[in-house]
Amino acid sequence: MSTPAEQAIVKQNGSSNRSVVVVLLLALFGWLSYRYLNKGNGAKSNQPSKKAESAPAPVKRATPDALESSMNKKEAQTVEAAATKYNKDYQERMRQMVAPKEEEKARPFIGFSLADNIVEGSLVVDGVFDEGPAFQVGIDINHELVGIEKEYTNTIQGVRDLIAKHCRPGHISLFHMKDTKGKQYDAQLWVMTADEKYDGKPYYFNPRVHKARQSDRLKQTWKAEEIAKAMEN
Image 1 (cartoon, rainbow, N blue to C red):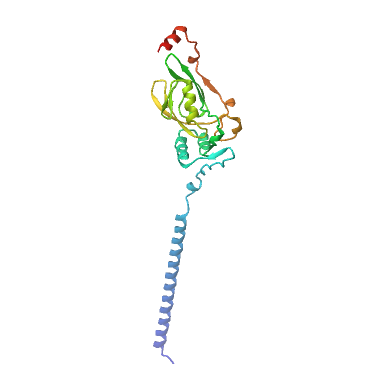
Image 2: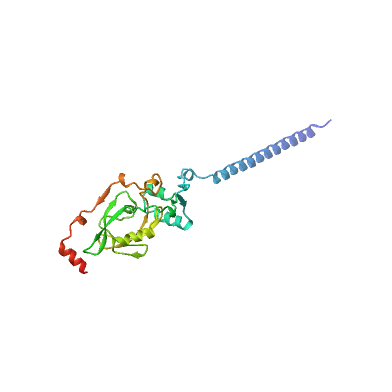
């Protein structure tokens, strides 16, 4: 039999062992908690923010039909750069990046008309559609057209030739203009078409349902002496 002293030592050793076990369990619990919390934070850091998730989806390119073609990379970059000058509706249309096939020869629509000022020898904007592509880039009544794509003219026929050469619906053409103060500027005009067979296409413009403003100043009748003087020059 063990003595009372030996029994006390055994009891003390048992208490010590239990204390060690408790400490180890607490340490293990703390370590597991640390791992769990760090894992949760890591997962959260990899998740996209709510702001990113709510961002609007980019406009999808339209699928070309039998009359259309997609734009190549350079053409698409030109349209994308020019789109920033247009309102939201136009931007969505432009970024679909489709256009009539070149062989379809869709008639271009530029959104403004010209009058030949024979006295001043210039081409002046006579009418403009307020919701048309020209007005979107700042072209307005009484502005002067100087040229297109670095080719210059001062005759109506010359403009027709340049439009036929450089303007294709769904694409950007660079128009060289002067405002009413004579300041020159370049307008990146998104050419559209008014051909009814393209109704519903992003580059279609229906002039019958949009309002156009006309210039009164250019409706005057030129006097005989003014015409004769202009012809001499």
